[in-house]
Image 1 (cartoon, one colour):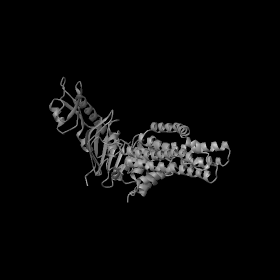
Image 2 (cartoon, chains in turn yellow, red; image 1 turned 90 degrees about the vertical axis):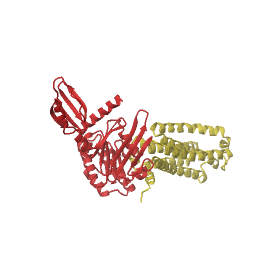
Image 3 (cartoon, rainbow over the protein chains, first blue to last red; image 1 turned 60 degrees about the vertical axis):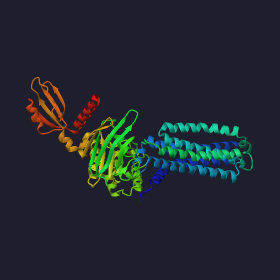
Image 4 (cartoon, rainbow over the protein chains, first blue to last red; image 1 turned 30 degrees about the horizontal axis):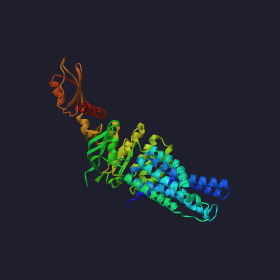
Length: 225
Length: 299
């Protein structure tokens, strides 16, 4: 029986990137633990570092896992295995998404625990926290897709720069253009305003669309190495 | 089952500054073919096309009976591929790489891998970043050889290696061929290496195959004749002679279709034959490329 090479490539990436995943989770958990100290400074620092740990993972994982494969010339070694360009792309997306989802979900669950069980923040912050937590996820999809399809360090770096600068623009637009967000984040209960739901639907739509588009473009490549 | 491990016909691939033109190549099962060409000749592009890494614009490619690129996954189970631009994971040990390959290929031969570790002087516990260039090449080839593939495709595997390391690798390549039915396509700029192990030779230059035949036939058909012409006589290029270099009375005739009667023919035309010399593969290669380029300019 022939081995599932895609699955082996996924496992290989998990082995190679395990340290990065552990560091991301540890940094996020430390940031959340700062919230337990209460007080405005620890609240601001904890929230900012929580977000940074997600961004760290979103930016570094595609670079170390996808861009470096080409830069360090390990790609020809992988392509000598029984895989095509599209299967390699599928393996890369599966592994990087899986690796990103572990810290992302861990940190999201930890943040919800802090809000719902430890009550460090009011429940009204949950909708905006979900929107904000989706931003690194979206950024990750964009960087991973661009790095895979763009095939160069330049495209990977350009995607990282674009994502990192756009976070603050998106954050500004959310606060200034969606009044229901700032109006409700101090509420004792989570308020799912239509604008918030729309934003979440668009975010999840893009999170599904970008990997699909990446796989499609990858399968149409005629020059791979 | 087809008799050929590799079959390329009418393969074309256009890039902005380079064209692979109408490449036709056949590697019979159980033989070693040396693909020789200068830098930028199209060796790597040809090899990438037959590995399915680059899609041709036109033409047909079959490897081990599989259509490429469509059936590349099925074909690659039986192809061992290594190229000079291939690197292993620096932060991992050779042992990790061995286990990785073992987890994929049921054909992995552990005993042979251990033997190669000893023969190549490698340590499985060592990280790749601690290996020298020669050791890295040997480590890569170990991973390829121990899979026991039916076809080995090696793109300049001996580039940058010292003579001892080259000897080790060429010896293993010859050993691989001891198993019946295995085939090797071996690209190189080093004609000595190719001459040492190949059964068939293919010359490629500027994206075109300029010649392809059995090594022995090549070496047999190409000769250099050192001649002395009578005063004031310009020697003719007799049938089978592709080039005459004459300075005063001394002349050198290069024959690519040498026949035993050729020296007599020159004697009959008034010349004295001082010597009939065999040519090395490198000399044949250079003469072939120069001739091909001259013809290209004339056309």
